[in-house]
Amino acid sequence: MTCATCHFSAAIPLPLKDVGTDRRARQKANRIQKIEQEQRAAKRQQQRQYAVISVLVVAGFIGILFLLTRAGDDTEELNAPAVTLSSAAAAVDDGSEFVQQ
Image (tube, rainbow, N blue to C red; front, side, top):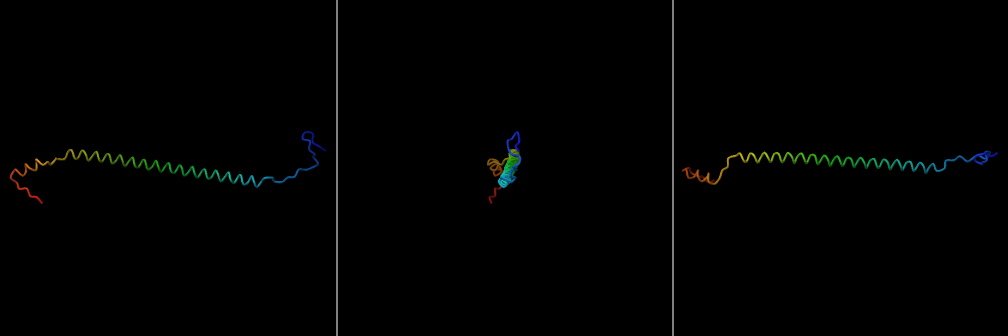
């Protein structure tokens, strides 16, 4: 007896065995392993980016603080009374003794 559409004999059963099951399982395992490796690599890359950004932010903050404190030192030096050689010579000419140590 034959099937009208497929021309195969219905009386002969086809063998039912798992053809390529091991190969498919290996391929699936390799795909999963590859995806996991890609995810780990992406995570490492993201951690590196966060580390670089954090270092740059901290360095920038320290640089700004350094510049602000240096600007404060310059104004203090300008406001401080300056001792010059002529003022020291005038003090010696006043009759006071200049003691050198």
